Length: 116
Image 1 (cartoon, one colour):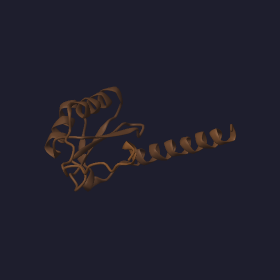
Image 2 (cartoon, rainbow, N blue to C red):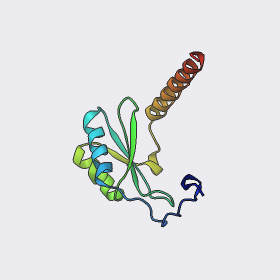
Image 3 (tube, rainbow, N blue to C red):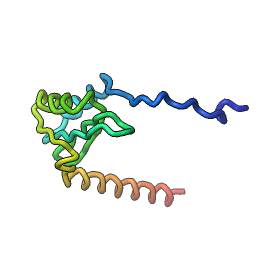
Image 4 (cartoon, helix red, strand yellow):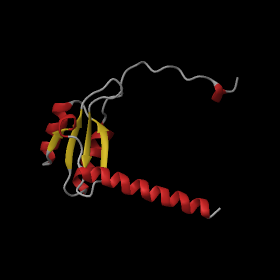
């Protein structure tokens, strides 16, 4: 049987934990953008605790963190406010940024189809 037709082995069931690359990405994002706020997402059945950073223009990023306390301490160390996402939700500017990106993608797709 061809290698690409074989079924992949099942994962061990363990969730991937935060690593240095995750934390470095969050720090770089926070330091390189204005008005950043942190939104701590609780651990679920399929993901570890995550930290969503949202800049003043709505641009955002999400990465795993070691836990909720770590996420709040991380934000405090960088001088940015942090909130529990399950309590306060996400800022409107994040939804607006997502809508702008989706519209840009639709326009790019339409142009690509027209150029064929």
